[in-house]
Image (tube, rainbow over all chains, first blue to last red; front, side):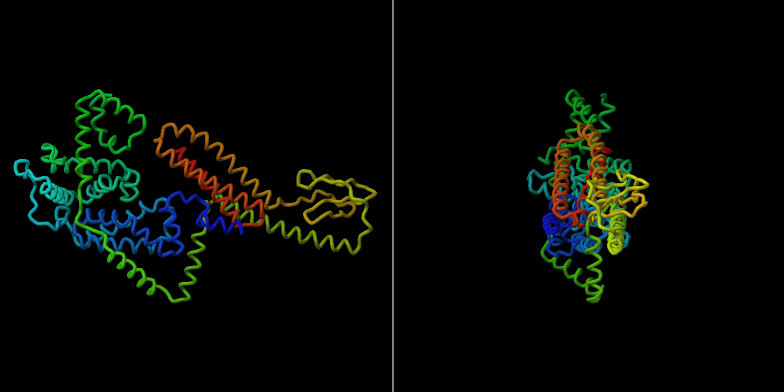
Length: 205
Length: 273
């Protein structure tokens, strides 16, 4: 039957299935487990990175990533627009991370880091070796992110590490665009202050 | 543009969030201003550092296994076999093409019209059968036009022969004195064509706005949107073809109308960009 051929070709969606992510989501919504596994493969890395930036602990980030995908699976039918799946998924991740942080009564300056002994680097103390510098810088950035308040941390990671548009960040966080622009600007200023020695010395290169 | 206007929006410029006009102004200013250009370079340098930031976290196969196990556990806990199949049926119905409110109303109207049409056909057939048991021999058929509410003419008061009216079920002789202004309800095919024409008209209007808007948009975005529209057009063409081959294919009809609705939504979003 012509319609059946169309259905199989179009993936049972009269709108256009323009990219593979939408196709996967459409198929996962129909119960195809393999499609959900492919969705997991595609999004698990950015999601775990995002959650890790928010909570600062590896094992916790893994647990919360698991929770994120389980919730996504259970609520796939509630997704109104398959083209917004990525934004929707990040929204779930944000909620999961926030619930965890609040349940642990975390203060914004107490986001733990797993490496101990990371200090704020000063230009004079920086060893000349590039590789050591990279670890120092990594640790410095991680601590600096953890020291941002929750809203700034959220907006900063979504923009700087995940290149989300202001509109997407607004959708994920629920913040108005003026608020997120202000938070982003202030977060960048704080981070800039922390990594200033690296900018001055040009050690990033 | 002055530096005091440029500096505050450098981050937004770097993030690609400015309007095209604002972007062009900043670009022109940066080309001529060392101070603002240096500030922009700092922002770029920061982003370069952040792009090299790595985290001590990895996605392992165990993580996927854990997700699978949780899903399986929750599925088992949620339902019995009968409930699973009921829920699955509901889910498969819900993931059928979503229709915009306008398309839903239209399909309901089509369904009602189809019901009325079928009922009328059945009644007409019954009336023909009833007359066939009591009618006189029919006069030679006179040429008639396909009836529609617009071109049915009133019957003359006295006529030597009983005129015939063509219906979907064949010629029907009218009883003397019966005024042939009985309106036939529009057929589903007519309703579909009307709906399609309305969509086409709406799309033509929106296309004008879209062409204006596209001049201000990023070429990459424009290309993606063009791809999206081309995909929808392919769906429309395919489903229209399917309907021509099988006019009673309600699934193709649903897909076609949904595709039109999606195109209107997309064009409206672009026009309002």
